[in-house]
Amino acid sequence: KAFGDLFLDTGGEVFLEAEVEEILINENTGKATGVKMKSGEVLEADAIVSNADVAFTYLNLIPKRFRKKYTDAKIKKMTYSMSLFVIYFGTNRKYEDLAHHEIIISRRYKGLLEDIFDKKILAEDFSLYLHRPTATDPSLAPEGCDAWYVLSPVPHLGGDIDWTKEAEPYKQKIYQYLEKRFLPDLRKHIVTEHYIDPLHFQNTLNSYLGNAFGVEPTLMQSAYLRPHNQSEDVENLFFVGAGTHPGAGLPGVISSGKIVGNMISDFGF
Image (tube, rainbow, N blue to C red; front, side, top):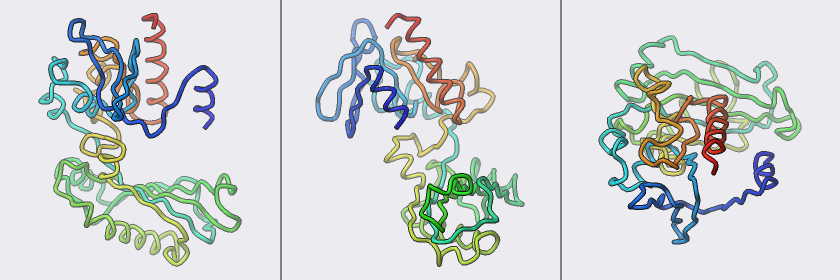
């Protein structure tokens, strides 16, 4: 909300429930002229900044004829990060012996990574990040309660996992694991819950293959070789977020915004 208020205070305008259908590009100059909304409305602009997944932006918002470098074939040939299975839940009791951050690593560390990134199968074991923000700020839940989320890295949708069938059993498996080792009688005390899986990343967040962090930060997809903040196909199109430079994670994402802000200022938009 603070970021939103700051944006409005500086003259920005926010459109809610307003999906972009296409980035409009001038046939003669190759520059973006604005965006066309799903509603048919056209918003003209001197520069476009996309905070969407880079692959999704190129594949779905920019016609092929304007993409000489980031062709469909190039985008689909790149390798993409894992996805996530995340359960948000609240308990009507507190677990005081759990810290704000708990990182739970599988004993089968290397094998689990191979299952996620190479085989793209849903492993029997998992590594988890367990987050209990009420350990630091009790006001985030009613008195005597805790707020949580637990995150499990899983393969993106390049594999054959049917999440419409696997999500619920996988959720219960995580609960069972937590009950046995960290949170006694957990399921008896859950009063609210919500989960997201790779289908959420693909269908709601418009992330290619349901990836959670953009292209993999491999040697040939890092630093200068990562998708640039300024599009190499459309001069006045810029990218921010996890999929561009410098990379995923809160510091990287915020840095991408600062980089693009400076670039647009230097261009005189």
